[in-house]
Image (tube, rainbow, N blue to C red; front, side):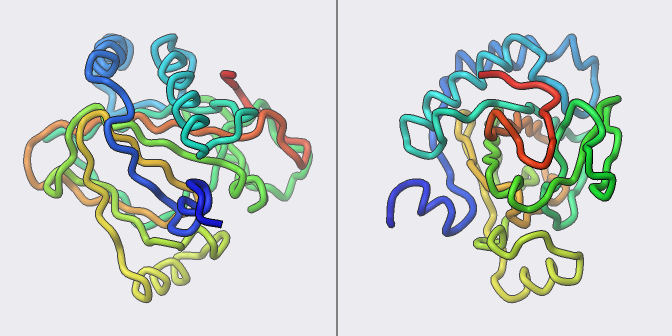
Length: 226
């Protein structure tokens, strides 16, 4: 198979140029400023009307591009707001936690509380069913702390730190620069990292997560948006 989903699943990521228009980006960004009040970001933005509207637009475009199952729903929206004053790095990792409505029936599944909401590390089959989409509200060049990914690493399952570093050393990294309005679709198990920005520019990214409406293993999403 060489369709869009097959190509995405081969590398674990795909850049989608100019997916959203500037006017819509401005509207969403302005709506978030007073709500965040200078915070570096938030994981719970799917409760905000403008983010729900963007999620609906993203879903329509992804379904049209054969990158997303029409039955999928948006389950999370996170803002990362990197500035000269709030300039951080992110070590090599996979995204292995999802927002759920309560502690899972299986007590062996790790649970943590983030911004007052429960998150669980589900079995790998759940993570493999998800698609993350990072929408760039600003240009992100090589000096702005862009995401770096290890192509194909999502196919190795959940990895420990030593395994992750070994896989990166074996396959190398790709730097994912992007223009304003571009989106990066990626599988959550894809190994990724980012450095501190080298220039004092703002780099805002809205990170959406899409998945099946119903989860296995007795898990229930904390919030969904059709």
